[in-house]
Every structure is written in structure tokens, then in C-alpha cells.
Image 1 (cartoon, rainbow, N blue to C red):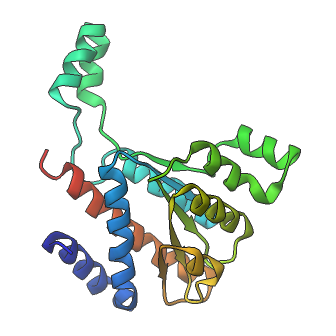
Image 2 (image 1 turned 45 degrees about the vertical axis):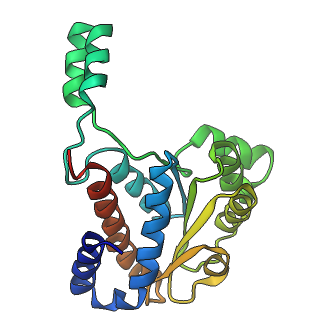
Length: 216
């Protein structure tokens, strides 16, 4: 664990002391994501209800600036301007580098077609099978750890050589058992679990951004 990662975890636990019990698992999950992005992989995220909103939230933090500016390279800025001097200049100024993250909850036409035509509980599994590649990461968010559609995606992920991270409540459920890293926040009521999920994934986003864009 680097000093910077430790500092972020220390700050997280200082603000949310109950997460001390999850510190090692939060760090392990971060290291899996860091390795994935170092290999130009992607994060695939799924959950239901409030956890679906969290999936979109995480993708939003990773695909654009969270706290640190992420300008495109000078080389790519030059290519944009060569294609279109006017639009390219604006794009070179405004585009932000991202870490590829796909919320599997966001594809309404695909998901509703699969739910209607094939299997309502297999929708995340189907999306992960289509989008995923070996070396990617699947982040499953389930307060109970037993969401059947999330678990189906976890099974597909493991079969494809995709690491699984589980973000759950205290029990952990099936997801914690299937995951390569499981963060079981120490709460049992759904809304309290979700209240602790947010600082955990914000911490991941800060650490990842600092790792990949901190020297820009």
C-alpha cells in the first residue's frame, strides 16, 4: 500500500470510523481496479434501485474530472485541431480524460428487450457478457449481497476471467462469497448501508484519479 493510498484511507476512516473494519478490503478492491486500468481495462458496474443510482454515480466520477483536471494530451489536441481547426480547438480545451466505466443499468433499449424477450434476472449477465473482456472488473452493488441479477453477472464474470468486487452490507450474502474483494459495510438496514457505500466509492474515485491524473 502506497503512502498516498494509506492517506486516503486514513482520511476516510477518520470521517467514518465504522469503516475501519473494511479498510483492508477497500484497499484490496482499489488495487484490483488500479491494475485493471493500468492494463487499459474497464469497470462494469451493476446494482438495483439506489445501488443502480450508485452505479451511474461511480461511472460519472470516473469518466470525467472528479477533483483533478484531466486535459487531453498535446498530441491528441493537435489531431483534433488538424481535423477541424474551429471545433477541434474547443474540443481540445474541453474534453477530459476518463477511466472507462460502464454502468450496466443505463442501457434501456437493450435491457428492456432482454427482459421482455429472454430473462429478467439475466439482464446484467447478458450485458457483462457482451461488454466484458478478460482483465476487466465487475463491481456488483447489493445491500443484501443476494440480488439475483447481480449474482448472475458475477457468475458470468468469473467464467470470463473478470475479477469481481462486491459492495454489500454487513452480511455480505452470496456476493461476498463469490467476490475477489468484498466490502461489507457494518450496517444492516438498506438506507444505512447505502449511506456508507457512497464514501467508500468516492474514496476509490479519488485514489484512482490521483494515481492516473495526479501528475498532469
